[in-house]
Amino acid sequence: MPYRILFVCHGNICRSPMAEFVFKHLAGQAGLSKQFEVASAATSTEEIGNPVYPPARQKLAEHGISCAGKVARQLTITDGDYYDLLIGMDEANRRNILRMIDSTNASKVHLLMEFAGQDKEVADPWYTGDFEATWQDVLVGCRGLLNQFFPQR
Image 1 (tube, rainbow, N blue to C red):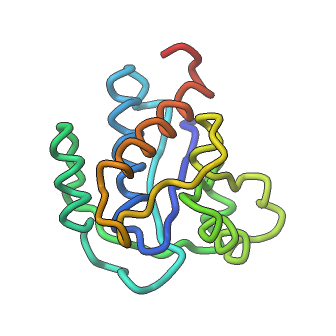
Image 2: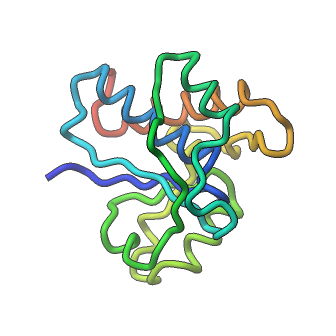
């Protein structure tokens, strides 16, 4: 059975879909796609049904990664039971995830940059417009996460 990972941010149109598709890309490059089931979700309802934000989609495309067909969805209480890891992009996301899932699943909730050994949040491009900084954080975090499962890949 694949390991199930859900990346979560506020709207599910920038950071969490970037993490979803970067992680899928890295796993695929390592020949490990079948080892994971990866998705992303929002803590808010603001963007439900909307596609990935164009600058985020463009940043992924610059690196040969497609996110075609992805639309924002909201985190549900059942996601806490279903997924093995729920990974927030910042502290506000982590707090909201913990409010939205059953407390018995709290140990599954982490911040992405923890997996890179960094005590920081993934840069939020919604406010800065700096999608390159977000790309760099997501890439480092996803590499660190993949390394947790398959060291030295």
